[in-house]
Length: 348
Ligand code: SAH
Image (cartoon, rainbow, N blue to C red; front, top):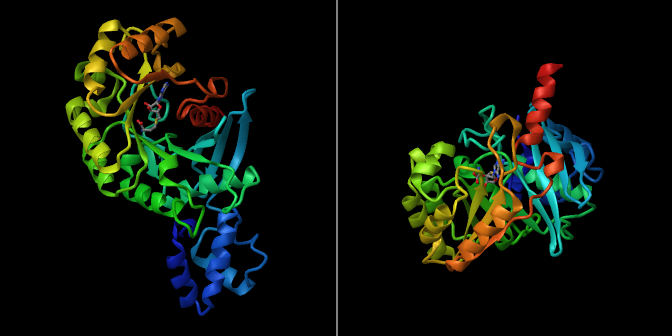
């Protein structure tokens, strides 16, 4: 079975015409899809056409099954996929709008030591339509439409490693920025990667001005190898070279994520080393006090330590800030909520 949300308007038009229907039907279905409707819910589409599509396409590939809210307006969603897999996402409210964090894989195979997403390894890649489906579900929930979006920014920072699912991500970016659909500006989309160097270079070639965010989390390869297995494959130097290529291709400064972990990467010397790594081209360092994941046993830092680290970076000429830790009390860190559900399922 296939997923309609994977199709561009052109692909859907070809399909509808192959089924002997008029071209405008494709546009009708497409508009409905981008309102977050299932085939069954499309009242203006002939029943015969819906029935022939249902033979090959899943009617509801993704749906929200649970919503958790905290006091600041952050919402966490659990989505069920058609094959029974579960993924999650977070909606954050900022002064300038609503940012939705989407997942790109079920699980993850990168094995970062602090992250909950890879506790159970990679289950499977999400298709472009399943990633888009998260956006459409939440936009619908917020009362938005394709023309009047309720989501302003997208971050590919949920479960999964986007650059380990390159083809689907590329297709997703095309669909989500298309004027035929929900028409996001690429400038309002961020992609976060643990640093798969060849695919950062490939991403540069797409010519899309999306924001590249690199999960660095260490000032040198030795420390990085302790928490991120990908560091055995690509060095920080290779990552910085690829980031410069990205900046030169897109004109967008590169953001480095740095989760502060007590006793691992939070000393003054680490700040100095980090400064020498990220200086020299337009960058920003986002410091995140580690969101403790029970199963991982790593410890977070005090607010004071985070502030000191940040000030030190700034003194050394680095643009840096401490990211608001969002949704901690609703299991906001990647993969935490899904894992809670999975372990409850195992206990049941
Ligand atoms: N695989 C991608 C995107 C997913 S994670 C990546 O590695 O960038 C989004 C961000 O959250 C990454 O920077 C990741 O390293 C970070 N992260 C994961 N678990 C965390 C935790 N427990 N505390 C703080 N940051 C975490």
